[in-house]
Image (cartoon, rainbow, N blue to C red; front, top):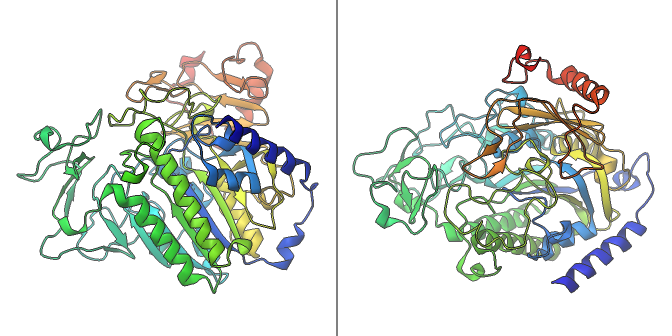
Length: 517
């Protein structure tokens, strides 16, 4: 493993030495402004979970290949430290805190994206792209009163996707079925699906009433309906023929993604390939059990890396790799125990999912939103490592610039040159979000406003960033965020507060200003 790391970083160093200087306009875009575009979006993958980003206890050769051959961002951010808000921002170019409903959604939530709202797939459709999503959706469906036995809408197809093959929410939430273009796959109409997040259906077993049916033990919050021996969030009845097999989910989504690009290869396409790994429940296919020493969490990361490798092989075999821009990232930072006993904590060993960063999923500290972020375009992007500050929100306006569209997300910035490795001038500032709380990044500085609540989410054992005092960190000198400079540097603190409030307004804390005096 150590020898592999030496080789990887030697290649990165060589790649950096070959990196082009800043160019005002990428010349390659003039030659081809309709490349295929693919988002590969992992779920709860941490900044330190890739060997290219410093992991020594796990090997991710296929993700590393993208990092070595493309631009690996060290200051790349999801917009939120939780999933639904990040996915909303990714597709709309809008800060999630602007939408009060952009929170972690139940499986029965209504569609979060307004059908009149601009989105990346809508923008690309107008430029002749075929658009598809395969994998996790978790942005709501319908109007909140879904009949799962008829066409389900509005959904992905109504916000710009020509093709959709999704799970409604998360792997740990009901309904545990795949939905293709609005219809539940393999549904037997004589066994209709019923879903309720408040009340169980009479006679249906739960993790509380029938623990003997479990093959995976719940830790917190996952004690409702049992599907495939796994307790879920929410109650479900019926739909037996449509229920997924968890251990086959990675293969199912991979095959759908491969089939999609084979079908659409003759025209420009946009594919949002949303992996379910390493979100809970972590259910690696049997051939990946024991692939790492870290139990199911490590094994599903290895499985995800393999899926990406197989997907890239398909692009290569179809002659598409040289004409495809690939963006790889994660919806938020890492978490170990997120509801099930799966030895993620006990078998962690020396691995640090967040790298040197503090916090994780649900946190306003850096590990909540700073994630792996890689852009790759074979033969077009000059490989290298970039410390430019970029956000997934910026993909909307940047891709608009790439394809010659004037459609933009309201908070998105045009960082096309940065994403293509032609510039290192990223964002100057960025608002970050975690469970309805916001923080601010500007230059080398990070500001976390005061919030009431415990400093640690005790269920997942992650520091969430709550404090009754302002927190100010110089990330250039203190990437671990150990030294709060709010009191020792009042001028910088006021400068950051003023810049933050100019965007966010003043009603951002759950502590009244009088309490802060």
